[in-house]
Length: 107
Length: 125
Picture 1 (cartoon, each protein chain N blue to C red):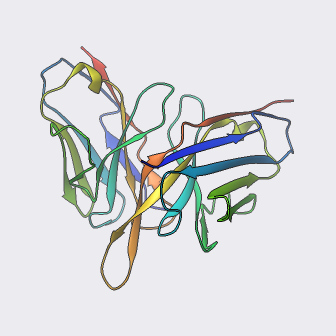
Picture 2: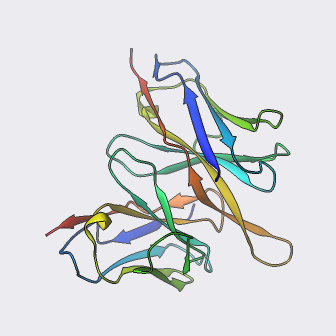
């Protein structure tokens, strides 16, 4: 299985901050990576697919980059609605695997 | 706008079989893969397996011996069965649509773009 490792596990930030979450794959997954946002008691919501493609309806402050084994999710200016847990997921090979999650908290 | 509605038994005893169904409304059923994902309380996400409209399946090897995913194209529904459950199978179970990303040479890679709301399944004696 491909292991996905996110860092940090927890991130404290303020409204208006620029934040970066990193995801590393244990082997190359080309650009077959998705990012999801999950709020308590809710299903995950797709933000980014193919490493850098923004899902329709997702605010432009979200962006993704990377290829191979190193990927980042950037939120350019944090909004109150962005405090949530974020997961990366590889869909390059079976079984699909997720990172352990990054919880974004209000500082 | 496609929506996924899921249902099934929420309380099971050890050794019983978990059974969930997900119905697809407002969109095409063919051309996609349909997945099940679970999330134990306070933990991360685990992909269980997927099926397409033709019945082609892929399973997580960690659960493969106990999992069966089936499809009913006449109802635009797909279902999950997980046998011999234990407390470790207690989780929120989600269904999701896999949308295809063309990777060349006729191969598609599927990311999960639409999710159901989740069903809480508790296994307890």
